[in-house]
Image 1: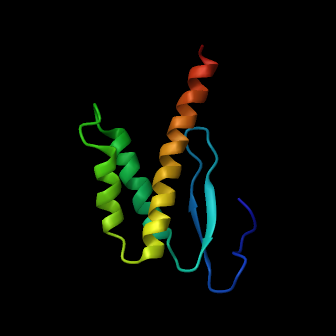
Image 2: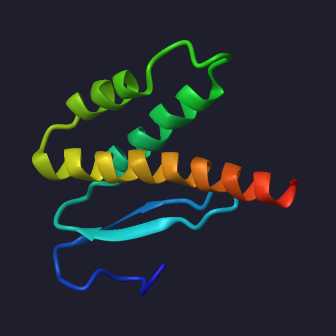
Length: 100
């Protein structure tokens, strides 16, 4: 996931952990956006864990996004949310190929 420090002073690493056999993501942000990224992953995981997907994924996305205070935090939330969805989609696709 790159070096252990962001490229510029005053920036922070934000990350999404590896999941579903797919790599994680690390990005440097101008503010500490890790709480926003963690919230995004929690919203996606909660949606994955629902039996029968009783709610809409877009609703989970917008509800969590609207909780973020700054533009940068909203963008970090978006990146983490869609990265986690992509991890599941890619992991499921890879699993399907292996079992075909």
